[in-house]
Amino acid sequence: MVEVVGVLGAKKPESSVGMRHVITLLLFLATTVSYATRVSMSVAIVAMVSENQYGYPVFDWDRGVQDMILSSFFWGYIVLQVPAGMLAGKFGGKYLILATMVTNGIINMVVPFAAMHGGWTAVCACRIVMGLTQGLLYPSLHSFLGHWAPTSERSRMGTFVYAGGQLGTIVEMMTSSLLSASRWGWPSIFYVAGVTCFVWSGLWLVLGASTPGTSKWISKEERKYIETNSCSDEIGAHKNMTIPWKNIWTSMPFWAILLAHCGQSLGFWTLLTEMPSYMAYVLNVNIKNNGLLSALPYVAMYILSFVFGWLSDFLVNRNIIRAVTARRIFNTIALWGPAAALLILSYLPPGHLTLAVVILTVTVGLNGAHYVGFMMSHIDLSPNFASVMMGITNGVAGIFSIMAPLSVSIVVKDQTLASEWRKVFFISIAFYFFCNLFYITFVSGDLQPWNEPKHNTDEESGAKNETEKEENVSKF
Picture 1 (cartoon, rainbow, N blue to C red):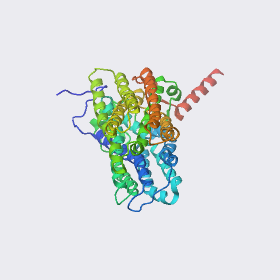
Picture 2: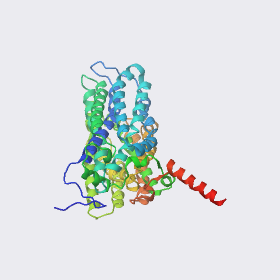
Picture 3: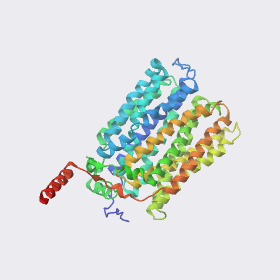
Picture 4: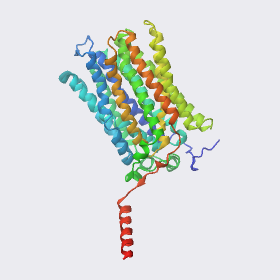
């Protein structure tokens, strides 16, 4: 049997399942649940404005109001990204994620009441607060991956964690359509999501840990293996760190990640928030089947993301290609692949339901490659400041997420015409193309010199002042 040795000589633990896998599983479930609560409104809102046979309230919300509700999540989402990255870098992400999930659970339980008694403005308020707390999630996840993921396992672990978002989308689109058509009606969509958040929070409180060094359950062997192969410092070492803001903002590889994130965000969220409406108004698919068909592309994305993650690690660990080459290849698949598929979809004649679903499935499925593209580049550049960089890029990308549903309201005048939706697809195609072009040109896979934090503690300052005083006295 071949013995796997880390970068600094630490042997990989013999046990096939370690605490890093437990943490990865819990983070995977966190993204699954959080995405389910995030996208639930995409299907629920169709049911909330449609007649039902069980007497649940029906709201007279026009398309503009519906898009306002769908986009309101991102109004709050972009606010705490950078602060979350800084907090996760200094203190770890355990309690940030716990706060996210508990708050989301409470809000989901409140949404039906808010809709019935406060109208669309109250629903928007709930979605804004939900977005505000979920803004803590992604920077915290990157902090965890920076500390828990050995370099040789980074692509697979990162893919597994973030692929939970696709599973959450799949489950929510399928169950939401079934729940809304059942005797429990559309309110049950939010109640189920809320209870799930509370269950996850209980598990996380017991098993979660920000770093291997703070875990009560990890073995010494596994802790040594992770810490010598992740290129990150313990959380305690970051309490007095100086974030290298100038180095980050003047780094072309960082700007490459930022633009790639923005292009991905606009294209992905345009499809995610508007696909149920496209299915309903252009392809004439009823609400019960809507969620099932809308989920198919995310099933493809979920499955393919694991294929891409395994393939990336295989190619890099076997020294077939460099890590940065893998990032460029898979990011190109993730952005230019969907751009080509959307271009075909734009000129597909009306009435081709099966072919349209196939193309949409390919479009979203190929997008799964971005998990081992720009999403891992933050950690490649700096594991210690990956959470801060993710906070910046995810925050800016969130602005483009807001633009996604709102742009549909501006561009699409008649929702039943495929030619109107073609304009929306063209916008996504342009962003996909140019943002990836910049990424593959300027991205880097090298660990940056500013990864190691510079400390400016009171003790150091005091010692410096004492030395200066002694020097001044000696002059006299």
